[in-house]
Structure formats: C-alpha cells, structure tokens
Length: 109
Image 1 (cartoon, one colour):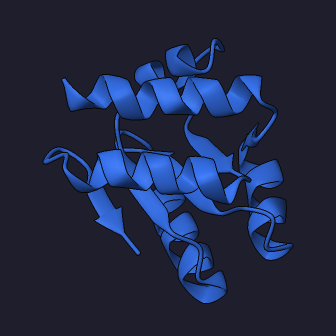
Image 2 (spheres, one colour; image 1 turned 90 degrees about the vertical axis):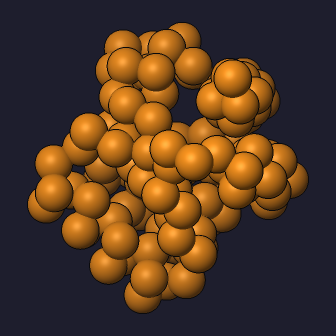
Image 3 (tube, one colour; image 1 turned 135 degrees about the vertical axis):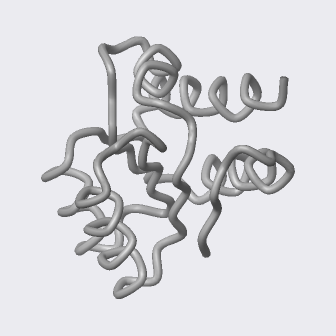
C-alpha cells in the first residue's frame, strides 16, 4: 500500500526532529511559517478540519486531510494523533509526492 511509504516518511521526520504534534503547537508553527506541511486525520472532527483548512489557507501552508488518528500516531511511535506539522521542506516534499498518488487522501494545496 502507498500509505505505508507516506507514513514511514512521517516516522522518519519525527526521528529527525522535523515534526511537531498537538493542536496548539501546530497552530503556532503555521503562524510562524515554520510548518511546511500540515496533516490532519481524516477522522478528526469537522470543526478541527475546518480550523486547519482556514488557517493553512491563510498562511499558504499545504494541508493534507487523510489517514486516521491511529495510523498517524503509530507512524511516529506515539499514541493517537490528530494533527501533525512537518517543519522540513525536504520531508514535506517527499510526503506530498506519496500523498499525491493516493486516492483515499484529500489533498489541498
């Protein structure tokens, strides 16, 4: 499955220290232009999805809505995660290439 490659890149970016998680920390990274890509779980609440869709649109940060909270969490070796931000342009590019060819992910640029 293609999911595995994108999720393994998330794990790699976590180990490299180029990933932040948690709603407030991700919002701060978006506002400071530190975030190069934001990933929101597909099973996140509609309110959370809208909040990040609006914020990422305002600050022109690529947004991916997809996967589920369990697979996002397990990909980075943590509990369930709803929101992640990749802070490295290289990792963001690698993940977006994988996400671009996946059908079950809604991708917004």
